[in-house]
Image (cartoon, helix red, strand yellow):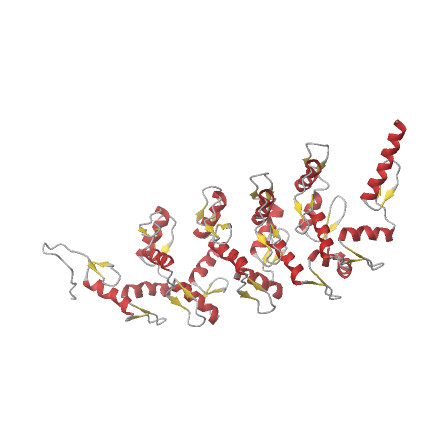
Length: 529
């Protein structure tokens, strides 16, 4: 029988034996001897299945349970299963909230000694795990192992249900929950449930409004570290994820993956209500709100509600006047990243939207939409509009467009408190109120002219860019905007849809009708005098 040597004082009381390298304490010399293998790099215990090597026998025993699938330790709170008692003990701290390991630098607390050890590397700046292929260094070995799969293309963790493969066991574990449907982590505020604890924490920031991750360059703050990392790419201009098919580059891997669906044409996410298909799960989730009517994002200043968080954020900037996106060439500032991106094309001369027929290029998608070739294509595809309005028989290609149109026939719920006008949409009422308040929130960044409507600003901006890219198919005249082109085409068609209610004279545009109505006003004034 092997003798276990312990360390006792003169009174026979056992005292801990301390490792001279890392100061860890052990009850026996045997345990210390095994522990020292970790420092010297010796790994005498080998797995007979995958040949992985370990410094101590207990680590090998825990590892073998991966192959056998044995998980004898069960959590009494959520029934999660674990291969070893230490993993269960650490897991239980999630339920109790216990965090016994404390950082002496910033007082942050952790559930496990390993997490504390990894955290301390943040303060020291040490990144001990280095990739020999590209030189990238990491604080955690598992992060390095994940990174190496990028070079090898290896995805060793396979789902037994759908054959999907993953680069890490954690990703596979998260994926498997999608098949089981289990969502054990519940929000105490709104009862929403999540598959991952991390997802719940991110969600809770919506209720608290907390944005703990601060940008060191600007005043931006974010609810997740990933969002902050993505934001920093705006300052550095870095887009590290490159498309192998086209010249596109992206700030996140998720954006690249979503972009690749455009090349493959793949749309794996299908709406169960209208069978519309999407290339991204987030887009499907947003689309489903059309059917449910859900608008979960509410403005605390004017109580307007929105389908999407990013639309709410952009809307709030209308109240605060914040314009965080600045052009590095002319210093013009914008509320949205999209607006800045479109603006930069003025300086670069880039025209990314190309007509498939005549190859003419445009700076904005709207210009291409009203381009003559594109209009002919849309006319040829008119039969694709299969959704018909049951009231006026107008046809639409998409369910969302039909639902929006139906508001015209229903009661105009949004009434102006200053005049008898009423509207089908809250946004239309909001725009109308500017006629009473005189508010002009849209400012030109070139000449500081201000406008009540975004559309008016866009039309005005063409004065500075000297764009006349909307061509008449009849006389080839070029006009500055789609609305001008529409009015111009009425001259050729002889269409005068705007009629005077006094004398039944008809006109092509509102401005002409308005001038005409003033003649009646003057006539009445002269008669009364």
